[in-house]
Amino acid sequence: MTGRDLTVADVAAVARDGRQVALDPEAAGRMRASREVIERLVAEGETVYGVTTGFGDLANVRIQPEQVAELQRNLVRSHTAGVGEPLPVDVVRAMLVLRANALAVGLSGVRPGLAELLCGMLNKAVHPVIPSRGSVGASGDLAPLAHLAAVLIGEGMADTPAGPMSGADALRLAGLFPIELGAKEGLALLNGTQLMAGIAALVLHDGKRLAASADVIGAMSLEAMEGTAAAFDEELIAARPHPGQVAAAAHLRALLDGSEIGASHAASPHRLQDAYSIRCMPQVHGAVRDALDQLERVLVVEMNAATDNPLVLPDGRVVSGGNFHGEPIALAIDYAKIALAELASISERRTARLVDAHLSGLPPFLSETPGVSSGLMIVQYTAAALVNEMQTLAHPASVDTIPTSANQEDHVSMGATGAFHLRAVLEAAETVLAIEALCATQGLDFRVPMRPGHGVSRARSTIRERVLHLEEDRSPSPDIAAVRELVHSGALLAAADGS
Image (cartoon, rainbow, N blue to C red; front, side, top):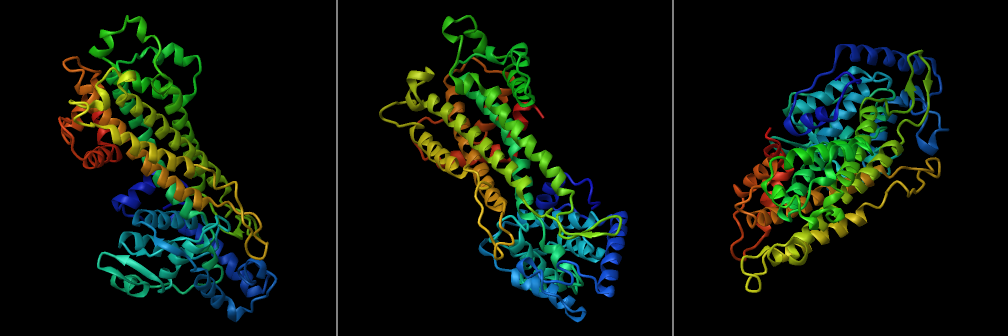
């Protein structure tokens, strides 16, 4: 943990795969240097926000030296005001690693022991129970981080391999010791954007894989409906070289390479132009890639930044500012959730075409016995319902603000709300794309013996290993779930790409 080079992949590995972490010695040195500044200022009786004063609108209240430690404990206790369902474990672990890395930057004026305890909790699977609701995204994610900090001081509740228990018992069983907070240390644990950044990092990790998987699934639909790859021509795409568009088109061309289906109708005058949901996949899928890349650029900065207030600058000055404000992430999160909603929207349009015999050239609702059997009619309803829900969730959370702390904190980012919506949009998008993949696979079965492109063929085979061809009506819910797992895990993408 250096405070300087944490990546989205690192966060996912710690949050989900249990990667072990440790504080870098150089980072510990920076932390000690900034801590010395805080201890000197307290000893000299200097006025420093949140160290020798109250918080928020109480910043004009002077704190006596003997009250400094009590101030920090009370801050944590008073801010544990979260409500709602507990956060998932992967989000809690993402928060822990991000908070430790923010402290490792070395500008927060806290002892290395705080970051080391956070690392120890990760390594021993001591996961604070954090209610999900309560953050307005400035001064950071206060209430959620307070519930996290409560366990560090031996309070609150934690989930452990031995089950849920008090924070004190969880630390004791893990061989860890609660920390006695000194000047500024409670504030340093609470001021930050680690909830919204943690959720965003995990969604980004999955979302980039989903965007690439959408190319696979869209290519399957194109082949099932005997579409043309002409619109993915390399020189055509280069005439408008948005990076995502170029990448998506190249991926589609690779997936469709070797297609017997495409070759069979290449000269047909009826196949010059497909509907937008097929023809414009590079443009739409590519724009989604670009939106996710923008979120990654923002997150890489945020994950390796000091989001505390005040900060102890390298020249020894202690300066109050607003690095805790979640607006940079909140805007990027809102952009990303709009993008993922669009990825699902265009997928649902392809599904609708697949089940419409007038548009696909396939049997009605992809049924072997139309009329007697409804086939895959209703899965499109499910996709449509999910897309409608996503369109509602895609409304930007960051355009709303509600003042807090007696109007001292009169503009907030609502980034945590956006992050929760982003995660919900991703989960729905995975299901919508799984439904398209299910329908496209059924459609491809009707094109046998003609073979699709090599990548599409591998994707179809992977799905057929889990889900049988629909000969007669059965519940499609288990089939949707099975395909969704292939999409979510990346197995479908890996098979299609031959990796």
